[in-house]
Length: 279
Image (cartoon, rainbow, N blue to C red; front, side, top):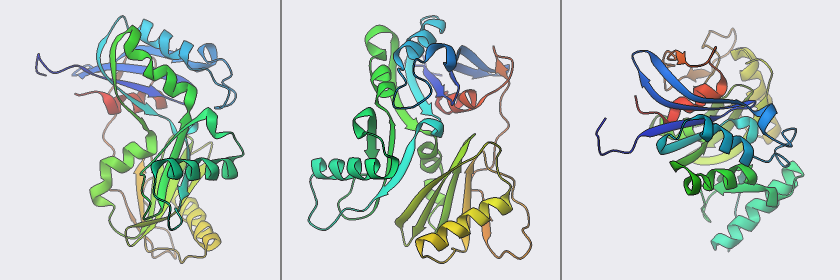
């Protein structure tokens, strides 16, 4: 690493834990901070009520005054996804944001004010929108004012997976982004996003169950089941499914996870933190 390049740190915000990884070397990935959210996240029972400032501040304090560019990856346990289709004549960013917020409240029954909403903003095509708790974004934004870290990016888990493999996701089909407790399924056709649906689970479903869920969802939407399904992230292994003609593709093969130096076992927060660390 160049002496003049800011150090890259990774923060993983998991479903039940917050982890900071500061470097990867021959020994493994070095954990600078590991924080159980149940002890440091008031209101953790709901994304709308969780207060993130104590957890973020404590994690940075544990990290012994590390400095550098902090890349944050957020578990989809804390994220909501949906599609927004702008009507003709809608064009300003203010109108697009109001449309996305209204659709969010309609779908999830929660006040949009408690969430930070972003999208691939466009007035000319359907958009994928996502929301993360506003309290988390506020706590992360304040990081640079009282530590040596500077926030380089804050990215939900599925969005980071899609960005990584975007060049290989050109075909029509389902794009399925797997995390530890959910997968996001995006239906695309002719370069257009048609639908988005999150499926939550306790144990990662096997491939036949995943395909059955996608077929049911396509039927509900009034579309034919596409011929291609992409699997991203912590997906189930590709196996032959009797009677199925669906082509299942995995653009990025899973790399061996480095040893977690400084914690007893790797977790979803550790896996997320690895995204931000330069080996």
